[in-house]
Image (cartoon, rainbow, N blue to C red):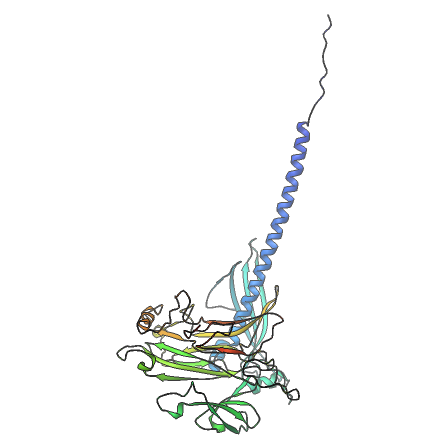
Amino acid sequence: MKTLVKSRKSKGVGLIEVLIVLVVLVIAWAAIAALQGKLMSGSAASKARSEALELAREKTEDMRSSIEKGQYVADLAVTGDALTDDPDGAVYGVNATYTRSWKLVDVDVDADGTTEDYLKQLVMKVAWTNNEGVAEDVVLNSLIVFSDKLKSVSQATGGSDYVGKLAHPNQQTAEEGPAPPGTVITGSQDPDEDGGNNQPSDDIYTGTDDKGNLVVYGTAPLASNVFLTVFGGKILKISGMIYYNSTDPYVRATSPSFCTTFAQRQQDCGIDNRSSIQCAKYACYFGGDCSNGGDGCPSIDVDNPLPDLNGGWYGKIGDFFPGLSNANQFPTICMGDTTDVPARLYYTKRVSNSTTGYSREGINTSFECHDTLISAPNDSDCRDLIDELAGYGILVDPSAVTSEVANHEIIRPMAADGTNTVLAATNNDYSNGVFPNFCGGN
């Protein structure tokens, strides 16, 4: 008897084929994941490097903006070959944790064997560890120049008699004191800065000199009374109130500038005369840049155009306590967003492009009502001072939903192709469309 055996043909996909497909897919997925990882790592590395470069620029600009020469010399003591770590410690950025360090080298401009105390070479290093645990850094080399106008001109022009573009950040915006010989033509009193208390010696005037420069002077139109000579066609001013229940402050600004304070009676500020809170008004004058026109600028003379001063002055305005030698005695200084810095920084931030960041230019704007709160050391957030002032109807609360006092950085945004014109002041009637006002108006 015969047995019939049916042959069976394979149907579908065999196990070996499935395994081969799976291996191919796994390899492809691994390659895609590796590529994606490299792309993400590269993007993170690029962002970290851009952030590090901005931190280097930021610290460099802070050093450039020293408020007075004594501070400049102390801050920029030569460190030799060793890098000095930032005493403020690490910076916790968006993409990494960074450490800043720098060294300074003396510079001999005219090769006479003598180095210049106003000029240093700054090497700024920002270091971090990337996502792969590899140490990275960026290094920025700069020249740091104190705003000594005559020396800066010599440095910028190689010692020649030709006037060149100044190397210090405020350019040739102004000169403290008269520009020799500096005969002053009678001007007019600044109605907001008359000193009060019937003290003519406190009055501030603005006018012109015999060369057509603008001047800020006091008492009488004499060269010896000139505080500031301005070259850019516009005198700008930042002013406000200081409310304090601590030692008396005085105000200084980055050179070239002129600042003054006017002590106010408590009743003139709306404060009960039994209160420990005192008040003073301050005003700082500096040079603007009318080369591109703007608010209050003179008509452009095509035969005698104004110099391009890169937006005029920028820098810091701060409160100081010369009578205090012990740091533990220093009071608390409060602004809109901080309680730990003694000065406001003003500048225009011009965006260069997405990879190189930005550059700083002059603020080219006047401001009113940029108040500051200075409280006793044990009032860490000025709350006691703020609450008492609120009881008198004085609204200067940084924690308010809409902050009632200006921040410690006043930054004017500027597109890469924008024009840095002089903006109208922000005052108690309006905002100029770029900055808010803090005078209680709309």
